[in-house]
Structure formats: structure tokens, C-alpha cells
Image (tube, rainbow, N blue to C red; front, side, top):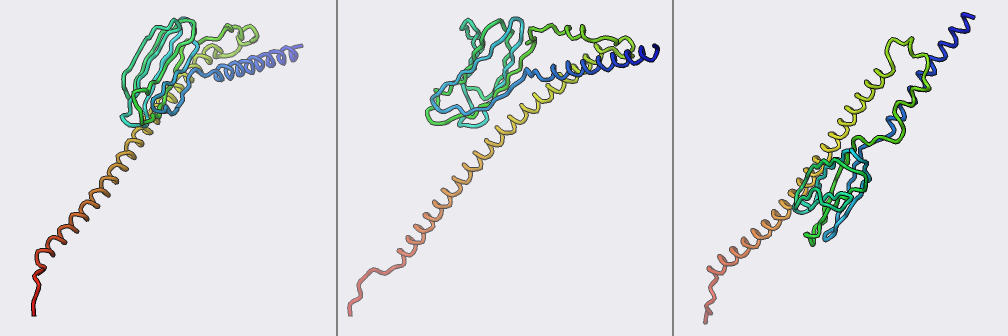
Length: 228
């Protein structure tokens, strides 16, 4: 009987660890961050929608990566239609909104430009977007954890802490990549402009040199008629 009790205890501990592992995997599968890059044609306005819950937080960061002026108009509207934030011809911006239930709309406006299209990157960070399921329900299916030296709650706290820091690192790296892409596009545009003006200056210098040679030669030509 003692052997049976030991086996049952060991099986319960393994069951607790396996169920805990599935809970951790489920929590990692729900991502609250997303980013998107799109091209905004000249004279156009593009709007996006995000459904939010009450007492949550919506943070949006955007950057204009390419396009003449590196600027765009930006607005955020509440579900009631009220404009919460508006930027006029800015290259980047960060806004945070304490939300309520409903669909939030954020728009990028390029109607002021009739020629240049804009390459725009934006990232959404959603906080306190809890699911309808109670986070403590999984504990009802876990038994026999009293013999573990470390409580499963401590393990969950540690894992969630690591997860949040990894998410923040990914967010920072994404923003840095966006800055790098914008700087690279700006450098390539300047490089093309320098090459264009260098070719124009070279052509002008060659034309001026040809005109000068022609004028100097014309000064030494004797156009008088010689009679014999």
C-alpha cells in the first residue's frame, strides 16, 4: 500500500507540472502587441480600427519611413466619435489612451500631398486586455503541489515577469528597426539627389568650356578677304 501511495503522489505531481506547462503555453499564445507597415498614396486617407475593453490601455507609435517631407497628419477618435489626439504634418509620434468599450479609430492623412506617397510604420500595444476566463480557474485542476519546495504561483510570477521584459525588448527592437529604415531611406534619397546635381554641374561645366574655347578661337580668326 505504501508503494501505491508513493506512485499516486508522484503521478499527481507530474500531472500538476504538465497542467502548469499547458497554462504557461496558453498564456504565451495571446499576444497584445502588433505592428504594421503600409504605403499611403498621395491625396489619400487611411483609417484603422481597434476594439478595446473598459479600463484598458491603448498605446500607438507611428513613424513615416519614406516620402517627401517625411510627414503625415494623424488622428485618434474614441468610439463616440470624439477626436482624442491629432498631429499635423509630423514624422513620428506616440500616444496612449485609457479606453472604454468600443472601437477606436486612428487615421493617417496624406491629402495635403498631391505627388508624394508615404511609407508609414505603426505599432499597437494593448494593456489590461484580459480574457473572459478567470485566470485562477486552472488551480482547481492542480493537486498535490504542497510537496513542492517552490509554489507554482512563484513560477508563474517569474515567467510572466520574463515574458513582459521580452515583450518590451521586442517592442524596442521593432522601433529601432523602423528608425533605421527611415534613416536609410533618407540617406538613399540624399545620395540620388547629390548624384543628379553632380551630373548637371558636369554638363554645365562642359558646355561653358566649349563656349569659352569657341570664343577664344573666334578672336584669333582673320576674316578679312585677301585679294591677289
